[in-house]
Length: 324
Length: 312
Ligand SMILES: Nc1ncnc2c1ncn2[C@@H]1O[C@H](COP(=O)(O)OP(=O)(O)OP(=O)(O)O)[C@@H](O)[C@H]1O
Ligand SMILES: [Mg+2]
Image (tube, rainbow over all chains, first blue to last red; front, side, top):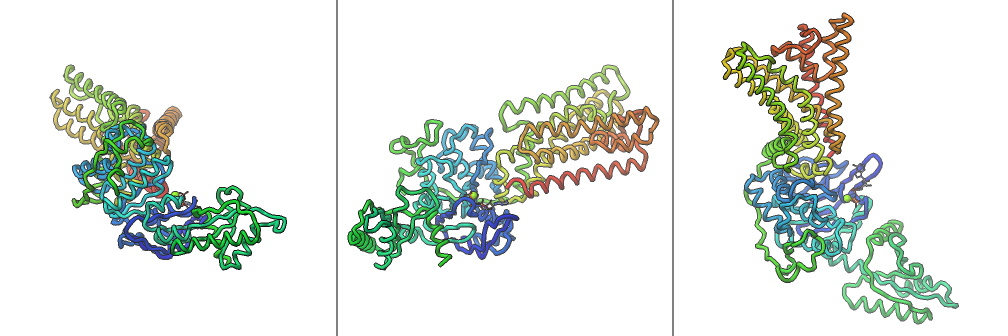
């Protein structure tokens, strides 16, 4: 679907993309990155709207530098920001956008009716969009990206501004775009967690560089962590340090909780462990090792819980990995 | 995916709270159908955008409220033309009191108001509501978008001026004025309408593209076409009273209104609006034409350059 080869984009002050190389297969792909990671910049390059500083990329087998028009004919784009004029109805707007994609007038009307129904917009589609809720606006934005039946849609933060229910509905809709409509999806978010449920494949970028690209199943396994919180004792005034040392001797690889992001309760006394096993058994053996080690040291075990990596921790790992 | 994932119709205006809509009342979507029909590409999209924008400048396809001003103004430029020919017919005059091109110049204040309302509507709103990225994420290039918008605005302005000219012409023929004279005058008048529209649309489109705020656009366009006109007219008046008659023609280059006035009196058989009804010398006439063309090209280039940055 998409092949990105050593792609860089430098603005006068910032490097938005830094020699990014990644391939994207048909299906739903999540593109995850913190604010400013370069997600939107990448999408604009893929649409052929903004030239890359160096490197190449192709979409549907077409070169973004030379075949932008042909790419845009078969690709849909949903921007991250508001883009709907308030004084026209969803129907009029989407019909117009369908014609802008080259659909004849009657086909544009038919496709608009179909697409709005598929995204879940019914009677309200005849009312001016100024009065729509955020959820409805996001649906119209999705509809205009799908109305010309593209082979691929690029969705830039489609869950932006939605409440949890709206978020779930949007994610369900995105899933259906692939499963029911047969359209491949590249969807961005700064939340790894929400894309895990929707995507077949996840690409994580940070500071314009590729952090990881792997199947979601693979990803979820590797990002599961165990958080162990212990108390200090007279014998071991720094319980976490002792535990960390002991675990390392036991062949495990404990690390500190991420400094970035929201501080977890009791963050200073927490030891994190990757649970990277292929099966649940491996997890169990890690749990046993931790419990036994804590007991041997005579520390008090406050809690031991499985957590998801937060995206910020994925980034910290990367930077520590760089040093090593 | 299970069928209850299918979004159900929302009875209320709120799209968010949707827990209740699951379960009963689910309408099962018939499956997704792809599109195998033709994709007509850039030139089709350009034409569609042109006609949509042109209709929009007259409030067609928009709310009833936005039709009021354009239609009132349209009536206001047409009715005097009808009165003019009616008077000519009743008084059995040999020719119309006001020439065709001259009539267009007389209507300048109304044309200015129309333009100041139409250009931001056609251009600023796409920037304000950030709709332009949706256009540019489609096959059309930025130049297609600019061409469609400029053409729509020019056409709107041309219609606005050409219809009164046609009313006068038809009226003049009905009043049995000389066919040859009237036809020549009307053709010259229509050429003038085209020049007027091309220049003013270019200026107004560029100004409108500079600001996403409609109010600013309206004010800036009115200022841009009236202030230089009054300034130049005042300077011409001073030149005339101080016996610098040679300067009048050259000063007229300084505003779109006087520029067009000079062109119509020199080349299109109209009466000059300059002090002492002065017309241009041969050299001045040539310079006027060059400046007119250069201004149109210049503002169109600026407009195009504006969209290289804006609208992404
Ligand atoms: N036109 C531009 N000129 C200069 N810098 C830019 C421009 N566009 C983006 N940037 C910079 O490039 C970097 C990447 O921006 P980008 O919008 O791609 O990030 P993002 O991953 O989409 O972030 P967000 O989650 O906030 O949408 C940022 O540092 C941003 O400030
Ligand atoms: Mg972004």
